[in-house]
Length: 468
Ligand code: NAP
Image (cartoon, rainbow, N blue to C red):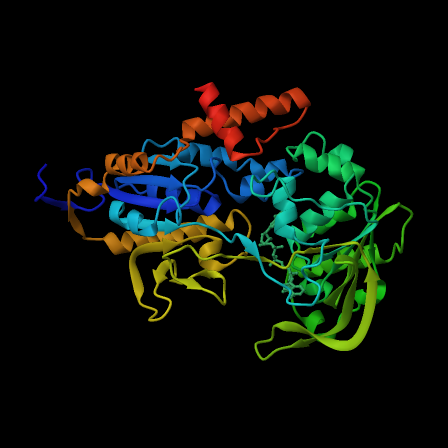
């Protein structure tokens, strides 16, 4: 091969060199969709800022939902391809710039998810004891950035704002009998804090009605069948307005049926309660000495907007709920990646069907793509990312169709290796991760748990060094 000869891009002589940034479900599904192409020779480098892969499957999925995590087996198969390399512990945007990626890859896929939370924008949001759901979730899942957080669980009553599935996870972990968490991969310190905790009542606040609730039927049923817990719903709040009656599909109807039945049971007799409130919005988090003491809520009414969507608006009737803790679970929010156009309003990478676009002109930024939550916002289940990533990969393939390229020495795996070596980073390969995986599973076995996660990046790097 000479430097002058041109080959078709994505052929054996000139493989397509792709960087995927983020090794959560969206990143893995993008890799999978590329690797499955029969007429494409591709070399993929999958980057993650942490030494561990799988993103929210590891740090988001609740510890008592191990079946959801079984999807990891699929990702392991994808990672086994000789056309994919994992580079953990490399933070794109600081260790490695997007400009450097552009130099070494034909195409870049951003699969960076949504790292933070939306804000409520009400007074008292930052009082001590008011937390985001993401913080709490990352804490009980041993995310290295969150292990130092502390949650004062000595209060009897907590409020959870929002009724998505994350709110359900938070409510379940707060309310569940801790003996049922012992064998999971929950962080040991979190289990201990929950055991010592006093939370007996969790009030979940939905701004709209039961028909519009974002949780899945299974998730609310799981709350409704927790041992030692009553799910309490006020029958008055189950009365549907005309627009709600006419709206919604099968799931919506089933959720209303289920909750209507529950509402007939009244207060119940269990010590622990999960109280589900509909058509209420927090308007202020109240506190004393900088600490949460209550949440002030406003009763809402529902109305259909011009598109037919059912929205809520305040009625001017207020109520104060004494609570010592507030978890804001109103959706995740993307954070900008330096050098990549970002839509501040939507909290996603600017893109058109996955092709990154300039934030000002709206023009397509060649060779750069977005998948998953970074592309469409924080919605959908893990599986949603499969078709979403495949759709972006289709655009990537359209963009190289008929293209030829010279053999470019900078766009070869060895050049990437050289560049990373020059940065003196402690890059974690997939084989290294397997060592960590093994260590965690073994440590878990000794404790009678599915896995005992390593807590810090330095501990992970040490294990790799020792086990190699
Ligand atoms: P989500 O499903 O979008 O739910 C967000 C909730 O916050 C909704 O109830 C929303 O109400 C409410 N909300 C938004 N802004 C609000 C405000 N200003 N005041 C009061 N409430 C507000 O988000 P999520 O729970 O973070 O979940 C993200 C995605 O991950 C979802 O697709 C979810 O299904 C998925 N997930 C799945 C599982 C599972 O399958 N087990 C577990 C966790 C997460 P409105 O509806 O009125 O906007």
